[in-house]
Image (cartoon, rainbow, N blue to C red; front, side):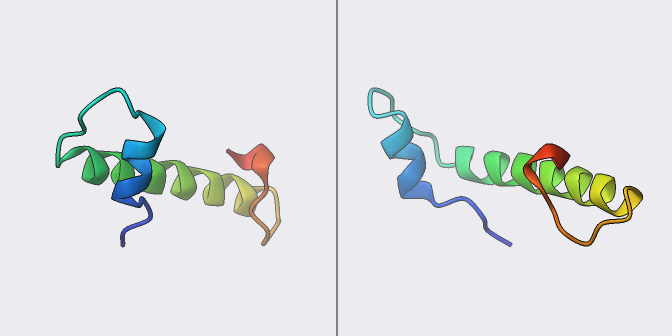
Length: 54
């Protein structure tokens, strides 16, 4: 599942070139963060992911 949009990475760091593997690595980190946040929400008895879970 791709969450990260490659062109948006380049917009975020306009002064740098972006290697092709950055999007994949960033995508993996974001998915890990979301998985951990989902676990916290469930442990707190909620079915809604909130910013505080991040």
